[in-house]
Structure formats: structure tokens, C-alpha cells
Length: 454
Image 1 (cartoon, rainbow, N blue to C red):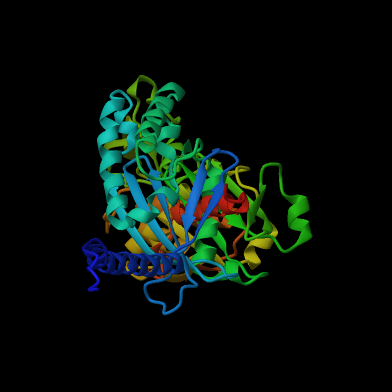
Image 2: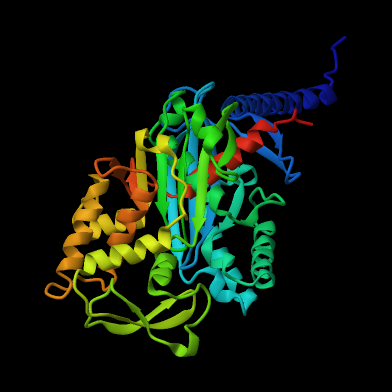
């Protein structure tokens, strides 16, 4: 008897084989994708105690490396200064067990500063959002949730009435919270002078590689408009014991604690010093609109000068021995204002901001590359400019005053005339601002508070 074929079984076989092949191929492709993805990234969670925020950080291999051992991470720091708001987008890379290195920085600035929106807070959001878009363009999407976003305001907001400053900061925080980046409760704040000095110290020691070598560090001198900072790591016990209250601060990084000598002298920044030398009072117009007269200005000079939103009428005075008279007036302003740490004269220092600008303007260093000089160079330049003020007017009416002030300020800090200072605007093409140190310290503090992933 002939066997009758089972057509139902044949039909099932014809369908099953292609279906099985498709399922097998799908599983194989999915496995390959999963394998590659798992080799390229790993997730772990960090909690910030102050912010209570969870930071999911991703470890990716460096694009320039053939291995998958580089950890790459980002940080965003907004510098809200008096004249503008600047964003720094930093990219870091780190090998296991080593100090991170900075692999890239993106920078953009907008004017005016946040303080200009004190009476129209809503308008401040547009500029902040524009800068946040810069961060989005330069940070890969997969890193957004893991990237800390921080804004620190300096002199501009310090000078505003407290309520106006807080409203501006609150508006910034609202914009930050709506962004895709990691935002903690402490993401927006006004920076005090000591923090500014310490952050700048971290920056210069990070960029010079000193943080990688225990026992090796450089000091930092910064001269801003409203304040000036000095920060270094003491090696002599006597420095710690002789330091006045408020001149020492502890910094924890890389599982080490640094006991730093750091102090910010509010009112001794270059612009505030100008006002004091002229005889004015910070934040107050001259009484009865009186003209402020100074021997540090040319006798032929008469004009107006604006500082902290107050306009002053100023003029020079005719006198013999202009440098000596100017130096005497500057000495009166500085008298008993600055603590002298004897150890400082033996520490290698970098000097920034107006130290750099004045030195470059008068040919003491290369305007682009920076360079080194001795403290006495400022005094030599001051004497020349002041004594030739009437016959060879400099480009700046304040040149005699500013150079005299800087030279005497450095002497008040205890630096001898032959003390060498290094002046740099950039180290390895990275701006020597406090922003790098501040975000780096912030990220390091989050890492110290790492918790197991849930």
C-alpha cells in the first residue's frame, strides 16, 4: 500500500527552517552588539552628600587608545564674573590608579555679566541657555547625565544687594535643573575669595604636574579687580603656627589632605586699590561730587573714572618727585593690611591676572607667551613711568599708579627684589583660571562619596 504524504508536516517544515534561521541570526547579532557594548562601557553610581544627586558615570575607552582602560569624564564650570559669563567644558581622561589628565577644553564667553540683569532676572536665562547649548555640542549624549554642571559667581554678584543676587542665582538654578546634565543642590553659588585662591592653586599645580608628585608644588598669586589672593603649601611648621586666623585652609584631593596657606584680601584688587589711592570710599560717590586728586596721575590729567557703577571725577597734581609721592601714598594704603609669610620668599610662584597684564603692557614679558621676571622689574618700570609721566605719557593714565601699587604689594608679601615670578596666561594651552581647579575639585569630591550601584 502506497503511503499517503502528510502535507501538513511538509508545510510546517518549510516554515520552521527559515523561521529558525532568522531567530538564530537575530540572537547572534544581538549577542555581538551586547558584547561590544559591554566591552565599551561600564556604569557605576556616585552620590554627592551635599547635593543628594546620583551621578551615573560611564567609563569609555579613549579614542586615541587601543585599549579600553581609559576612563573619560567631563565637567562644566560657569564663571559668572563682573564683566561677563564664561563657560568652560572640560574633558578628562584617566588610567586606573593615576591622576587624571585634561584632554580638551571648550570655552565661550558672553557679555554682560549676570549682575547686569539684577533688575530683569528673566533676561539672564537666555545667555545661560546659549552657553548650555555649547556644552551639549561638545559633550557626547551618553555622558550628559554623568556630567556635573556648576556655576560660581565672583565679584559682580558679591557687590549686589543680597536679595538681587539670590534671585539671579535662583533663575540660573532653574535653567540648570531643566538641563540634561548632573545638577546638585550646590550647583550655583557665590564664590568667596579663599575658594577662588585655592581653586586657582589647584589649576596651576594640576597643569604643571605638581599634584602628581608628592612634596612638589608651586604657589599662586592672583590680582583681580576687587581682591588679591596668595596661596601656597607650607613646608615649614613655623608658617602654620605663625599664620593669623583665617589664613589656613584644608583641601582634600586624591585621598590626601593639603594644609594650604591661602588668603584673599578684599579691597586690595587693582581697581579697588586705585580708588583707595585716590582717596575714595568703596561703593560711595565722592562727597559733594568732589574731585579726587592724586600724585600718581599726570598733573595735566583730568577726567572721569567709573568703578563699581560709581563715576568719580579725578585729576593729577603738579609736584616734584612724582614716584616718591606716589609710593608714599600707596604705602599708606597698604600699611598693616597684608600678612607677611616668611616662607613665601622660598616658594616658586606663578602670578596671574593683572600681574600678567601690567607686565605684558610694559614689555616685561612676552604678551602672548608670558615669561619670568623678578619683583624688582615692576619697581624699575614704575620709577621710569612715573618720572617720565609729564614728558612721555603712557597709554594708560593709571600706569604710574598701577605699577607702583603692584611693586609695593609684592614687597609687602615679603618677596625680595630678586625674587623670580613666573607669569602665564596659559599652561599647555589651557587658561590658568580658577575654573579648572574648581570643577576638578568638585568632581573629585563626588568620587570620594561613591556608593555601590543600586
